[in-house]
Structure formats: C-alpha cells, structure tokens
Image 1 (cartoon, rainbow, N blue to C red):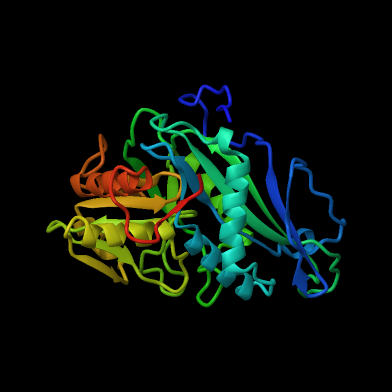
Image 2: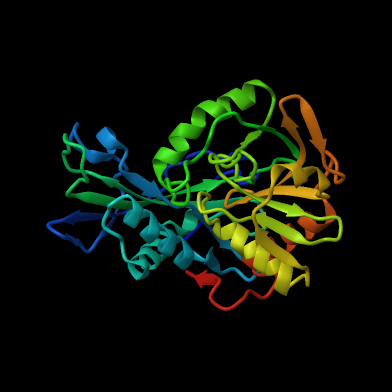
Length: 341
C-alpha cells in the first residue's frame, strides 16, 4: 500500500481521521468477536454510563516505521495490562490483554498507509479506550460496554527540538490517597483541565502536583511522570500509590540501568530536595521526555543547572537511547517491540 500524501514533517499533535478503527462490544457477560470498521461515529443512549458517571478508561501508545522498513508498536502488552488494572478499579469488564495486543496489531495493519515514514519525526498514535454504553440512572456500573481503538498520525511533539519547559506547583490536588490516580481513568484528566488552563494563562507548560495527603512529596503532572537526575548522575523517579505507572518511565529506568550503566532509584521524592537535582524531565508516550528547566513555587524559582536551552546530558542520553530502541537503531530488550508488518 502507498503512504498517504501528507506533509509528514508539518502535521501537528492533533486528530486526523484514518481509514479503520476496531470495535468490540460487551453484552450479557461477554465480549463479541470485534470488527474493523470505517465508521468513526458512535451512537449511544443519552443515559449511557459514560455520560452520567464518567465510567471510562483509555490507553495511549505509538506505532513506528523502523530503519529497516518494519512497522512496529512499543510494548503494547504493557498497555493491555494497565488497561486491565484500570477496568478492575472502575468496575468495568477487562478486555483480555492478549486480545488487546491482537486488536492493536489488526488496527495498525489496516491503517498501514497512515504510518509516517521513518525519519519524518512523525508516528502513528494509537488510542484504545473503553466506556459504559448502556443506560444507567442509579449510581452503579453499566451493564454493557464498548472497547474501541482509533489511530491518528501525529507530528513530533516538539517542533525544532526539545526545549526545556517551565512548570508551576499547583494548589490543586491531582489524586486522593487510595483514589484513582494510579489508573488511566478519563475522570483523572477531566479534573486536570482547569489547573492546566490556569498554568497556561500564567505562562507555564504544566503543573507539578504534590501528594494530597501531606503536600510534601512530588507526585506527577497532569499527564506525565517525573524523572530527576542527581549531581552524581543517579536517575530518580517518585514512588507513590497515587500516580500512574507510566510505561515510558519504567522503560527509561530500565534503559538508565541496563544500557547506560547508571544508578537508579524509585523512592518518595520530597519537594524540598528538588532544588538539589541537576536535571528534571517529564516522561510519557507523546514526547518520551520533556526537559524541565524551571519550577515556579508560588513565585520562588527553582532553576536546574541543565538550563533552559537544551536537554541535560543524562536526559539527552536517555531520550536518544529509548528512541533508538523504538526506531530499530538499537537492539531492544526481549518483548519490547511488537512487529506488525
């Protein structure tokens, strides 16, 4: 199949409709076989569980064209496993991990001419999601659900290079202790929209959320985990039961230890120690790592030695190594790369 005629280097990080999406419905206690369809419209009752009580969860991953011309996805089994955990917490029927991976393969294969060419800086973003589709008026789980996967080509998250960003400490809490912060529920992101718009109006790219219990420990931002680098090049990431277990973050910590030979720590990170770190980054599917140059704590600026012009040296190595693995330039650990074509 021929690639779509797009200016791959100019597309942004926004939705572009592709040819096929995957749909499977849960009814009477089981999932149907699932289909690929060209219809991108969803019809549900006005009283659907997702509309009344926000019963939904989602995932995000990418497919790439590698240097040798294969189309691959990065660790889709981990996304499937995380979605199972989200479903359990939200009283939704889990879509089996093996079927999840197969559905990703089928959906990407059906849209192979939308996969951006190697070297373009663009990728095919994959969004699996699930929602309560049957009518619910009392506060309880829906009885029927729909699982879907859409794909859309997206451009590089950073135009012209990954310049460090400035973020602010938020007065809002992202997640309650023993709440839903550790699952990828849509409701978590809905509550972050107001704080992020405040941050943008004040000239910041993101919020740093502290733990809701004591407001002394670093948690995450609205959509990314933190990585810090100490002055002796130890890579540190916060440990908390109320943050999302990022697949990118877990992969970067593995890369730091096993590819770069760095010491790693996953532990509680207290906000009063942040000024002692040499580098800071936000990690997630979209950008891999977004370098942070400055954190504003209610007018007090914490500036990292890595500066505001470019990634710090350790974060740059982490970024280069993980993207090299994803794109096939560096040999991947066993099981990390799902070959689709």
